[in-house]
Every structure is written in C-alpha cells, then in structure tokens.
Image 1 (cartoon, rainbow, N blue to C red):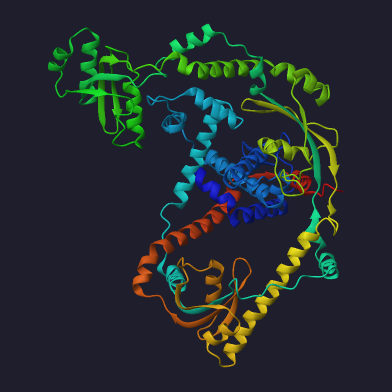
Image 2 (image 1 turned 90 degrees about the vertical axis):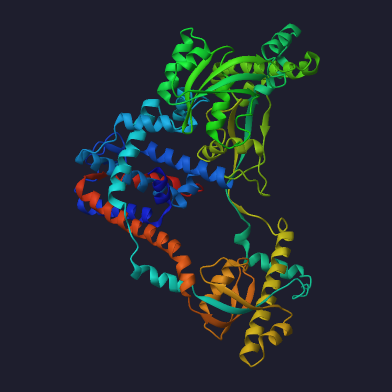
Length: 635
C-alpha cells in the first residue's frame, strides 16, 4: 500500500484527481468551510488533512530527493514543481479511503498491525526480538509517538484492504496489448551520419563587438537569483576534546573491560541439538532441572546432537548474506559458558545450544592500544561535555548575538559567501557546512536581514544560522562574464556549422547522391546498416533512436541527440514485429498495460469515494498556502 501510494503521488493522475476534487467540491458544496475544524485543509469523516500533515509529507519527499540525487530543494521549489500539490492529493485520497472504511466497518485490528511491526527486520535485535528503543527512535524521526506510529500502520493496512479488494485481478485484454506489440516490436534498418571532432574546423576568435552583441541577446542567462549572506555559529563534541584530561588508570580499567575487543576471536566448543520444537523444549527443561546432557538426550525422542568447535563468523561462512545464519551466530556467542539455551528457529530448523567450554583469544598488549583507548575515552567525555551545554546554549540563543554566544562557548562565527536557497554561491560552489543544515538554509529565505534560525541539532553538532545580508536578484555585467560569453558564442557558432553540414547531407541525398557520398562531403562519420527495434535498448543515443521512428522508409532527415547535436538518419527498411519478438515482449507489455488500467480504475474508484463520503475542503486555505509558497520574494 505504502509503495503504491508513493508511486501514485508521482503520477499525473494524482494532480488530475486533486484538481477534479477541488473543482467538484467548490461547485457542489454550499459552504466550503463546513466541517473543516482546527485550521485544517480537508475534513473527510473523522479524518483531517492539515497544514502540518502536508508540510511533513513534503519534507519527507525533499529529504528523499536530497538523499537519492543530491539536489537540495526549497519548499518554494516543491510548490513550483507540483510536489506540494501532489502531497495534498495523496493525503486527500488516503483520508477518503479511511473515511469510507469507517463507513463500511473495515478496520485493521491492533493485533494485525502489531504483528506487522514485529516482523519488520529493522526493529529486531540479534535474537529476533523486537527492539522497542528502535521503534521509538523511528517513530520520533517521523514526529510521532509509538502509539501514533502503530495507529498509522493500522490506517495504512486498512486502506490496503480496500485497494486489494478493488484492484486485484486486473487482466490486460488482447485487443489493447496487440497494437502496442506491433508498435514497440517494429524494427528499422538505418544508415547514420554523425559529427566527429574533425568535422568542424575551429571557429575564428570573436571580436569584442561580437561578444557584446551576444551578451545583450542572452542577458537572461546571466540573471542571478536572490542570495543571502549567512553567518553560522556551529560547534560539536570535537570542540571539547582539548578540554578533556584522561587518567592512565582509567585507560587501563577500560582496557580490562574491553579485553575481548582487543583480542583474537575466542573459540567455543558447543553441543548443538536439533529436533522438533516441542521435543527440544522438553530436552532443555530437563537439562535446566539438573539432568546430565547424555541422560536428557536419551530421554528425548527425536533430538540429535552435534559437537562443534566455532569461532565468530564460522556459522555464516557458507552463506555470509543469510540474515538468519548471522543471528544464529550471534546467538551462539551470547550464550554463557556451561549454559544451555533454546529452542531458537533458524530458517526451517529448530536448535538448542549448550556451551561446553570457552577459550579466550590472545590479547593485544596494553601499550599497543593505549592511545586508541585514550582517544575513545576523550571522545566519550567530550560528547558528555557537549551534551551538558544543551540548556545553556538554548538559553543564550534566545537573547544575545552570535558573537556573544561565540565568546562564551569558544566556537567561532563563520561568515560565508552569499548563497541561493540551494546553498550554491554565484560560482556554483557549495559549502559542506551548509549542506549539513539544508533544511535550515531553506528556512533562512523566509527571514529578514539580522534574523536567526532556531537552534539546529544534528548528531554531535549544534548550530544557529543568521541572515547577514539579502542580495537582491541581479544580472552579471559583461565584464564579469566575458569568458562565459566567449564560450557561449563559440559554442553557438559550432552548433550553427554542425546544423548546416547536417542539412547539406540531407539535401545532397535528396538530389541523388548516395548517403556515403553526401556524408563524406560534409566530413561526417557514417554508421551503415544498423538494425534498431523501437522498444529495444540499443547502443545509439536514445533520443536519436526515438527520432528515427518518425522518418518514413526511404527518407533521410536530421534527428537531434540528447546534447542537441544533429545526426543524419536514412531509413533503409522497416520490418514489422515478428511472432517470436511479440511473444518475448508480451509479458512486459501486459504488465505496463495493467498498471495503466489500474490507474484508470483508481481514478474511477476515487470519484466513487467522493459520492460515498462527504469531503469538506477549505479551498481558500489551500490556495493561500500554495500562493504563500510560490510568491515572488522580491516583491
């Protein structure tokens, strides 16, 4: 369900449905504010879509984009690209699903949601038990309590019940897939001529008058966005390292506590028992009651014993990527000496383990690891001192300048070159410091000169950012960009020459010359007799490959590549899809068609939901919210 909704929010249907919903509600409802409470955008039954819900959804999407592509987007960018509108439509759709589920009495049980949570690998420890600390941490990252997180899982499962009932079993009709198979399976044999490094002579150096004229025609290319000069007061636990004094006796004490860490792997001799769970449980109970292993084994039907000598990692050596084996390895080395534990399930097998003996590894001499331990202790103490400044730093942040705070905590105020909302300078450079606080940088573009952000926390680091100066949008002068203008003008001349040569080839072929003769006259390289299938992934430029299917058999034309360079293509032959190719492509085509049909069904389903549940929309609040995000900040 969650995966489908992430796909749905990116689809064109999401925007279309949002527009249809808003228009439909405005024209059919007498009072658009009726039923919307607490400053919400939309109310559907007992379910609301609020501004904070939208903001949270957008922030999650912006974080995803930053992690996957490295692109840093502002809330304004999100609104301009339609991300915010898509988030609103997604939330409206979900609220409508849940309201309809309430109406018909469908609801995922707490036990079902809890079972799903228990099965999530990220929340399990080495023994397969649920780590509630990890659950709480993850919930906090989503700005939820554990109870709210569990409730959100129930809502997602409830929505998935409705969708599974509505969309399962979509089959692609042959009448729809056949035209696509014919279309994508078509093959063309083409001859190609392309520009090379030796095709175009180096252009003559432009005069200053030519450069000035080109600059005047392209001034918009040198338009600079609003930038802000920023000061940052940032400090971390590393700033406290020089304030920490580590005693020799503390180093030795920690060495003794961590001796296993500084030793070669220990060796364990274990008795491993396998069998049915009930039989193993009875066997383990006998041993824990004081019955000797051999006697307990004799009294336990179906339990077998294997004696193993193991080092850490031996269990997983054959299957290093098997998570079950990794957990079993950790389990074995967590069992105390002379103790039996189990049963535990690994894959389809149940085990119990008795640790017969432990031989510790050889320890690295203290002197060889003394400095490493000293640094570990210093880092830990520095982090404690850093954490201890939490309250005092927040108290200072509310009332004194960055410079005064700097004096008191001993961290410098760093002044940075003006940056845009994405953290880039005029030269396109980025600050690694600002990259850590990308969300705070976006927030700076809502502040006036002299204002500061709230305290920004990250792992082992704390900061405040201030707007020192707002640099208004402006156009760079000719003198500032003269070198860029020269490059642009020369590139334009090369492009014009390339276009002319390509057009000359087409004209020459149409006048009666062979393709090879015409290409040779324009110094273009020839790639003869290439077979390309419309739906295939060839070695050619994808844009050229797509363009050649717009040319009729026997014709010659110019096709643009991805870099806008001209290629000359002659279609020698068009071959329809063969039965063998159609058979190979059918599964993929059917899958794509099913997805398209599913989107159509979801649109119809969503329209039906609007007739079953009352959707109250505060259109003016949504409009004001979007306009505030997209308004021109220079006005």
